[in-house]
Length: 160
Image (cartoon, rainbow, N blue to C red; front, side):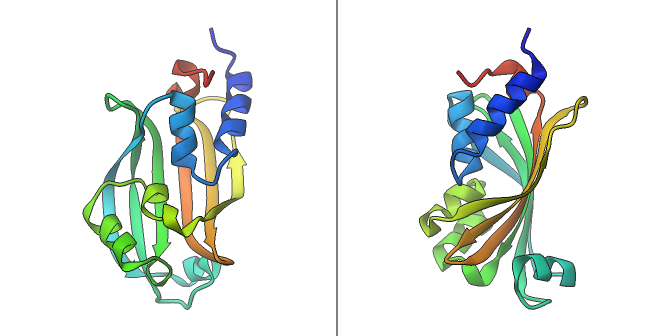
């Protein structure tokens, strides 16, 4: 049996080793990662969201949510993101609008860095890790993300 705490520690180290959580999830699971987007809406940022993203209230953001999946469709994480429209290219916006491409893949050309805002590992339940992060490019936040990794990520795969 996999020791949950030890496995979570290893998973966090792998996940945080690169700006792209999707890429690192693929490293951990040793398979390609796909996204299934269940919500994709362009809307005005609330004042609180604008403050976090350093944009004017009412600026256009894409509110995006879904899941990341391993080959075969196993759900690995629940994801949500707010993407600042003015800070991505038209081709990136088109990818975000028309496909289920993972966010990190869609905006990868920006060479963003990932800043963890909060991260905690529940001791029980369906989620093994909750992460909130900002994706920065050129000194400005491009997106705010929330990731909830499911327990099967560390119990099914060991990352070795």
